[in-house]
Each structure stands twice: as C-alpha cells, then as structure tokens.
Length: 569
Image 1 (spheres, rainbow, N blue to C red):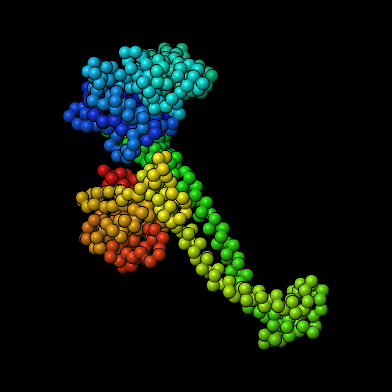
Image 2: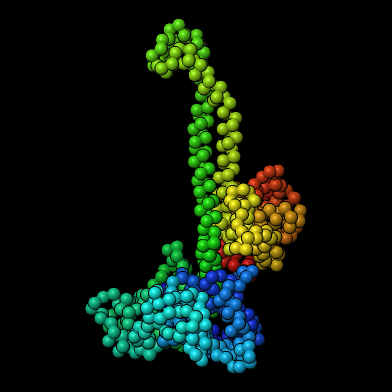
C-alpha cells in the first residue's frame, strides 16, 4: 500500500510541526472506524483524522466536513472523558512501522496528572485505535476489540496490558548502508523488489518498484545506491507529495513515481494530498455499507419493471391482433356449414380481400364449429379492451424504470446523510416499510441539508443530490428569477445559481456541477439545460424530483473533479 512505513515517517514529521504541544479541544467519532480530534496548536484549530478503516486506514490533518451522529459511540465518549482538554506532548513512529503513538498529558477528574497513549496501528483490515493508560500499560478501550481467539499473540480488550505486534526483525532502512542491501538481496535470484520488501522495515511494493525503475539495470552496482539515495531524500524531508493517475487508477506517494506513467499532480502537504485522494472514496464505501439494502432494492425494482415492460409489450402485440381475431370469427361464422368437429384448420374465401384471395383459419379440433367461432370473438373483445389498459401499464412501468434509474444515480453520488433521505422518500412512496429506532420511536424527517458551492466570482451555487433535496431546492428555496440547471435527458441533480444575472463563467461552473452530480459523471461534452426557476414546474401527481421546464438554453461541459473540489472549498 502507499501508506507504508516511509510514508508514516513523513506524516509523523508533518504532524509534529503542526500539532506537537497542542490542546485536544474536541473529540468526535463520525463513523464506526474513524475519530476526529480538534487540536488547538500554533494559534489555530486543526482537525486530525484517525482512521482504522479496513481499506482506507490513515492518519492525517483534514479540511473535510464530517457529519457527527446524534448519539456519540461509546469509544468516542471514553476518549472525551480521558483526553479532552489534555495536551499532546509528543508523537512518534515505532520501528519505521505503520504505528504512531500520541503521548498525551493532562489532569484527571480528581486533579492528578495523568498520562495516556493513543496508539494508531495502520495494518489494513487489522487497523486499530487503542487508548492506553501509560502508567499502568493497561488498555482503556479500542475502536476494535480483538480477543485471544482471534489473535493468540495479544488481545486488544479493555483491562488487558498493551502488547506491541510481533517484531518482524527487518532492517531499518534509515540506518542501512549500501553493504546492508548487498548482504540482504540475492541479485541472481531475481524479484529484487520483493526481496527489498521482505528485508527492510516499512518498505512497500510501490517504493521497491520505484527503486528498481530508477536503478535502470537492476544489479549489485545500481540498486544499493538508488535505494540509499531515495531513503536519504525522505529522511531529509525532501518530498513532493503526488497523486499519479495511470491506467484508470490512482496512486499516491511521497514523490511522483517515475515507474507509473500517467498524469501526476503534486501537493504542498501530505494531508492536503490525502484529502484529495480520498475525496469521495471512503464516503462512497460508507454509503455502500449503510445503503446496501437500498441500492439492492432499487436495482431489483428497476429490473422487475424492465421485465414487466417486455411482457406487456408482448401482450400489446397480441392485443394488436384484435382485428385479425374479428375476421377469423366472422369468416368462420359465414362458413360454419363447411366445418366439422376435429378439423385443425380450414381455408375459406376471404371476402375482406379485394382480390378475392383465401385465408387459412386455425381451429381447435376439440371444439365445435360454433365454439371455434365464439373463441375468436372472445379473443377479439378481450384484445380490444386490453390495448388501452396495457398501454397505460407500459407507460407506468416506464415511469418506474426512469424513477429508479434516477434513484440509482443518486445513491451512487450520495453521502451518508443523503441515504437517509432516499430511504425516507421510498417510505413515503410506499415502496418500503418505515424504520424505527431501538426505543420504538420513528425516525423523524428533517429539512434537507443541501450542498453549497461558491463560484470563482463568489456567487453561491446550491446542489440537490436526491429527490427530497431537489424538490426542496427547486420548489421552496430558490427564488423565481434565479437560474436552474439540469443535465438534458440524463438523471442528475437540480442545481441553482443564487443570482438573477450570473456571469457566463458561473453558468459554466454550475453546469459542470450538474454534469458531475449526474449519471454522465464519467462522460465528456455533457448537455446541461439552464433556465429561470419560474419556468420549472412540477406536474400534479408527479414522482419526487420530477419536473418539466421550458425557455431553456443548453451548454456542453465535461465534468471536472478538480473544479468541483475548488468550488466546494
């Protein structure tokens, strides 16, 4: 992974400069595996994110806004009790591993000096955040509990002594010289990058591949020198945090990686880079966990209605044969004298044909001639009556498909708070049953919270990311002469520019937001309509979020995540 021991070392250096000696003013736990500490240091409040997420574990300063739960989790309450108001005396890395210890000092509830350690273990799905009473070396609690049944080496449980993970007995790369590389690596055995990972602490495959690439011909002469040079560069703080986009994937590291060919974007700090890299990634994962049942339900309903349309269209094709059934019945009635029971078909003169041709009429051999004629008259009447009903049902099914297609796009662009609003909408539409809290009380609806953006000229732009937000934004919040935008014939968000006469540049920026928060996010040259809010109407009885509009103009834009981030800030 990119967040290896070397990256951890550089992050600790960054945090020491920003946070050492600061006071922990607030503790929040917005999500199950993540804690936010608000620390007052160097005259400013800074938010420190500690994440034990199985895929996105990290430690960084963040400028992102996080929604806090109405009731803080137990681990959050315990942290508030033990470290809120305390001083962050020091923080450091352990053995060039992905472990950071925060040394915290303060006075407990009876006024005595108390020393705590907040230990962050960044170990993939085994990542953890552990609060330890330093004096007794006893675990007070952890964000994840691990018993001896899961880990025979140590238990991470309240009351247990804190034991470090097993030593890997690898060489510290910051203390290594070229001779250490020569002793550790078998250049004849091949897979030199893997050998570097196996023998040196905190080395990730991505760094090892970079060493091999920059070495050119990987041999005893080139690799040791390149390895030591890159390590010294990191140790001296000579880094340039970068995100590399290659082959449709993104990677980040302490400096632009030459072995990855693609677009490279550098940042001033590691934390700024991580905010950009994880923008939407971790949130999307949380949405998937919280809204997995909703996403599955929407997908199933959309598929069910698509199958329904196919069946109804087949029924309609059958119904459109009503005239043929009528002719069968009338021709058969006119030729009953020529029909006998047991016949499978009969060829009769077709007096509907101006040229005097014949028509073959299929018969049921088990029915009498008159019963066969009556069967066709019944089919005619049934088909005639069915056409109007089937057409109406097809139209309704198509509306449902469009509705669930729109909801699917909204789920994919949703934040965790948006999922609750989508769930409420499905409850109000009678699609799912209402959830209740554990105490038996129903979850109360609240006014939608909309996403605000600021155009480069300072104009406010508001985006609705689900149907409840769209209805509220367009029908209640927006003024009649403000500018409304939506992707043309593509499911997406309602966007409103809080200005009666916005500049052309602001319209383009708002159109980029509309395209980004639509089903066409990954497309180019996306058509976006814009008009005044007064020209947008919601038909009576229409589905949530559905509107019609006129007097529109159209611009074509390409979604740009960099611009979205800039407008968000």
